[in-house]
Amino acid sequence: MALLQEKLTRLAEREFRQIRGADFTESLNVRAARSQTALNYMLIRSLLQLGQKFGMGETCFWAEVRRIEDICQAEEFIQIADLEKGQIQKLRGLLFELQIPVTGNHAMINAPVFLVMAALDTVCQLAHQMRRKKADLLTADVLNRIDRELSRLMHRCSEK
Image (tube, rainbow, N blue to C red; front, side, top):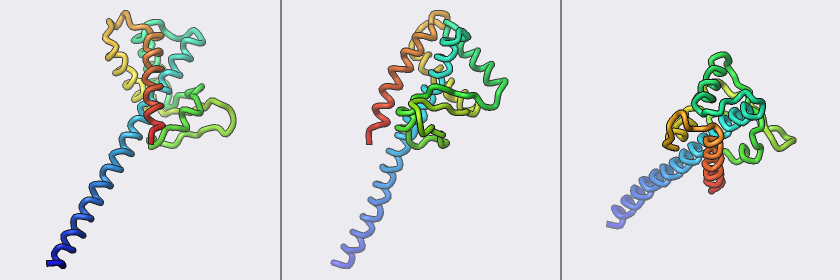
Protein backbone atom coordinates (compact mmCIF):
# COMPACT_ATOMS: atom_id res chain seq x y z
CA MET A 1 0.00 0.00 0.00
CA ALA A 2 2.87 2.41 0.79
CA LEU A 3 4.36 1.82 -2.68
CA LEU A 4 1.05 2.66 -4.32
CA GLN A 5 0.72 5.81 -2.18
CA GLU A 6 4.26 6.87 -3.16
CA LYS A 7 3.50 6.40 -6.89
CA LEU A 8 0.30 8.37 -6.54
CA THR A 9 2.14 11.19 -4.75
CA ARG A 10 4.82 11.38 -7.49
CA LEU A 11 2.15 11.40 -10.19
CA ALA A 12 0.23 14.18 -8.43
CA GLU A 13 3.40 16.25 -7.97
CA ARG A 14 4.29 15.90 -11.65
CA GLU A 15 0.79 16.91 -12.76
CA PHE A 16 0.62 19.90 -10.40
CA ARG A 17 4.09 21.03 -11.51
CA GLN A 18 2.72 21.33 -15.05
CA ILE A 19 -0.27 23.31 -13.82
CA ARG A 20 1.98 25.67 -11.85
CA GLY A 21 4.11 26.07 -14.98
CA ALA A 22 1.00 26.94 -16.98
CA ASP A 23 0.08 29.63 -14.45
CA PHE A 24 3.56 31.10 -14.73
CA THR A 25 3.39 31.05 -18.54
CA GLU A 26 -0.01 32.71 -18.44
CA SER A 27 1.30 35.48 -16.18
CA LEU A 28 4.20 36.08 -18.59
CA ASN A 29 1.76 36.25 -21.51
CA VAL A 30 -0.48 38.74 -19.69
CA ARG A 31 2.52 40.92 -18.88
CA ALA A 32 3.72 40.75 -22.50
CA ALA A 33 0.24 41.72 -23.74
CA ARG A 34 0.16 44.72 -21.40
CA SER A 35 3.63 45.74 -22.54
CA GLN A 36 2.70 45.44 -26.21
CA THR A 37 -0.46 47.48 -25.70
CA ALA A 38 1.55 50.13 -23.83
CA LEU A 39 4.08 50.25 -26.68
CA ASN A 40 1.22 50.60 -29.17
CA TYR A 41 -0.12 53.59 -27.23
CA MET A 42 3.37 55.13 -27.05
CA LEU A 43 3.95 54.80 -30.79
CA ILE A 44 0.68 56.41 -31.82
CA ARG A 45 0.87 59.06 -29.10
CA SER A 46 4.26 60.05 -30.48
CA LEU A 47 2.93 60.29 -34.04
CA LEU A 48 -0.13 62.27 -32.95
CA GLN A 49 1.95 64.67 -30.84
CA LEU A 50 4.45 65.14 -33.66
CA GLY A 51 1.65 66.06 -36.04
CA GLN A 52 0.24 68.54 -33.53
CA LYS A 53 3.66 70.01 -32.76
CA PHE A 54 4.57 70.77 -36.37
CA GLY A 55 1.10 71.75 -37.56
CA MET A 56 0.69 68.71 -39.81
CA GLY A 57 -1.83 67.03 -37.56
CA GLU A 58 -5.57 67.07 -37.94
CA THR A 59 -7.94 68.32 -35.26
CA CYS A 60 -10.43 65.54 -35.98
CA PHE A 61 -9.02 62.20 -34.81
CA TRP A 62 -10.36 60.14 -37.72
CA ALA A 63 -8.79 62.53 -40.24
CA GLU A 64 -5.54 62.08 -38.33
CA VAL A 65 -5.93 58.29 -38.62
CA ARG A 66 -6.21 58.65 -42.41
CA ARG A 67 -3.09 60.85 -42.43
CA ILE A 68 -1.10 58.21 -40.54
CA GLU A 69 -2.43 55.46 -42.82
CA ASP A 70 -1.28 57.48 -45.85
CA ILE A 71 2.20 57.84 -44.35
CA CYS A 72 2.32 54.09 -43.72
CA GLN A 73 1.41 53.28 -47.32
CA ALA A 74 4.42 55.20 -48.58
CA GLU A 75 7.02 53.74 -46.20
CA GLU A 76 8.35 50.42 -44.91
CA PHE A 77 9.55 51.87 -41.60
CA ILE A 78 8.34 54.88 -39.64
CA GLN A 79 10.72 56.74 -37.37
CA ILE A 80 9.11 57.20 -33.97
CA ALA A 81 10.73 59.84 -31.78
CA ASP A 82 10.31 61.12 -28.23
CA LEU A 83 9.50 57.79 -26.62
CA GLU A 84 10.12 58.06 -22.90
CA LYS A 85 13.13 55.91 -22.10
CA GLY A 86 11.95 55.15 -18.55
CA GLN A 87 8.64 53.81 -19.80
CA ILE A 88 10.19 51.71 -22.55
CA GLN A 89 12.62 50.10 -20.11
CA LYS A 90 9.68 48.77 -18.07
CA LEU A 91 8.22 46.83 -21.01
CA ARG A 92 8.76 43.06 -21.03
CA GLY A 93 8.04 40.32 -23.53
CA LEU A 94 7.69 42.51 -26.62
CA LEU A 95 7.65 40.94 -30.07
CA PHE A 96 11.06 42.42 -30.85
CA GLU A 97 13.90 44.10 -29.03
CA LEU A 98 13.95 47.88 -28.88
CA GLN A 99 17.24 49.71 -29.16
CA ILE A 100 17.29 52.01 -26.16
CA PRO A 101 19.94 54.76 -26.09
CA VAL A 102 22.47 54.73 -23.29
CA THR A 103 22.23 58.48 -22.73
CA GLY A 104 19.27 60.84 -22.67
CA ASN A 105 15.70 60.47 -21.48
CA HIS A 106 14.10 59.76 -24.84
CA ALA A 107 14.37 56.96 -27.35
CA MET A 108 13.79 56.84 -31.07
CA ILE A 109 12.98 53.69 -33.02
CA ASN A 110 12.42 52.73 -36.63
CA ALA A 111 9.15 50.84 -36.37
CA PRO A 112 8.07 48.54 -39.19
CA VAL A 113 4.84 49.70 -40.80
CA PHE A 114 2.99 46.56 -39.69
CA LEU A 115 3.75 47.48 -36.07
CA VAL A 116 2.56 51.05 -36.56
CA MET A 117 -0.64 49.82 -38.22
CA ALA A 118 -1.26 47.35 -35.37
CA ALA A 119 -0.67 50.19 -32.90
CA LEU A 120 -3.08 52.39 -34.83
CA ASP A 121 -5.72 49.64 -34.66
CA THR A 122 -5.26 49.48 -30.88
CA VAL A 123 -5.77 53.23 -30.54
CA CYS A 124 -8.78 53.14 -32.89
CA GLN A 125 -10.37 50.54 -30.61
CA LEU A 126 -9.75 52.89 -27.70
CA ALA A 127 -11.31 55.77 -29.66
CA HIS A 128 -14.41 53.69 -30.43
CA GLN A 129 -14.83 53.09 -26.69
CA MET A 130 -15.09 56.84 -26.18
CA ARG A 131 -18.61 56.70 -27.73
CA ARG A 132 -18.56 59.96 -29.61
CA LYS A 133 -19.64 60.76 -33.13
CA LYS A 134 -16.72 60.45 -35.52
CA ALA A 135 -16.94 64.12 -36.47
CA ASP A 136 -16.89 65.17 -32.79
CA LEU A 137 -13.88 63.11 -31.69
CA LEU A 138 -10.85 65.36 -31.38
CA THR A 139 -7.24 64.25 -31.57
CA ALA A 140 -6.57 66.06 -28.29
CA ASP A 141 -9.30 64.03 -26.58
CA VAL A 142 -7.82 60.77 -27.83
CA LEU A 143 -4.35 61.87 -26.70
CA ASN A 144 -5.73 62.52 -23.21
CA ARG A 145 -7.35 59.07 -23.17
CA ILE A 146 -4.11 57.45 -24.39
CA ASP A 147 -2.22 59.16 -21.56
CA ARG A 148 -4.68 57.84 -18.95
CA GLU A 149 -4.63 54.31 -20.36
CA LEU A 150 -0.85 54.37 -20.68
CA SER A 151 -0.46 55.50 -17.09
CA ARG A 152 -2.70 52.64 -15.93
CA LEU A 153 -0.86 50.09 -18.08
CA MET A 154 2.60 51.26 -17.03
CA HIS A 155 1.60 50.83 -13.40
CA ARG A 156 0.47 47.27 -14.17
CA CYS A 157 3.61 46.54 -16.24
CA SER A 158 5.67 47.46 -13.18
CA GLU A 159 3.89 44.87 -11.03
CA LYS A 160 5.69 41.59 -10.58
